[in-house]
Image (cartoon, rainbow, N blue to C red):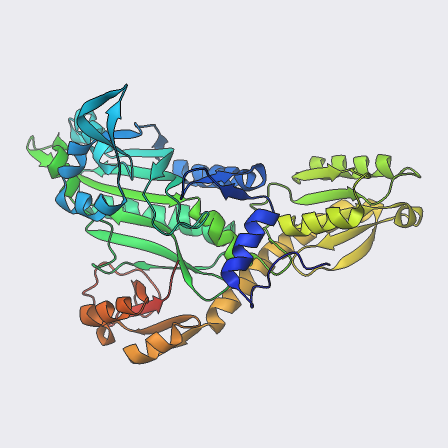
Length: 468
């Protein structure tokens, strides 16, 4: 295939930008830092929404919607929160041709406005837990934007919950972390993630605990794929979210928040893409099988249509490419770029022999298959290639992760991948030093890989890396 993209090994950032443009996933918006998500990219985001939404609802949360504009005074009620977001805020001072009596902030996240309404809706312990989620856009003014990874406006889901006690809040934040986020990322996106606890320095502004899911990208850097936060009673006190307990005492609620965003699209590209374009895991792919007419004539169109229908009837998300006025080679390159998991090529010569050609995106293999066996072959390929993409990403992560004993060794290892070392060998002073060299503590885990309850637990392991 003719080279369309900058090779990843030559210039990974340029490869990423090339791929987004050539696969028609997104474009830069007219305002610096904004993006236009094109249909091919948005179709993947819709699949992400669908899969994630089902998992979130399975945990008991319900969808709602809250305003884009938030009174500036709301953010100022929680000091750590406003301090953490101040550099990123977009503030509206005029509306309707007049200066506003109070400036309004374009939401960077919705803890404050949702806290205001939680206080209004919660009276008794019987109203708890209150489990809410919204799909929305947020604005965080980015100085160094990159499509999908860091944009001034992006799409996401943000969950916000209130609970009667700390243990219930913690259990729910962890449930979202594992049952919604980790399950989706590993089993649908095919991205193996390290799940751990953020250090105090990296914690979400206003939270008491932040849990994270970190994926390794194709250049060895880390990407934070999602986070879940325990907010303690900080926002409950700021917004007076109280309830009458069963003992008839008035108590402050315990709250959580958690979110994932279109950043996952960037992660999908960088974790699985190759020099020929996207490789979309079958479970998330909007088009799993792409039936292509190589050349018209000799019943090819009819046979291709029947294969499309048979695949659709078997539950495969399928599309038919019958654009025979466009050279087949160009169409094949486009299909490679967009990462369709399987192509079914139907041409006069193969059809005369009773075959179609099944092309698998993961390894580029091309196999003549009897027309009657195409459906079963495609189904088997989709299952196998979902596993292949996950397993290859896991093998890559393990090959680029090293165990070290000192911070100096960790900083050296971070040039090409991740480093694991005792948190006691880093500490807050070492973390500051690492940050000065562009390296961050991505998360803390227990020696067995599980998520700690506190960064003060003994024998914790730190994961250090450069990150997006």
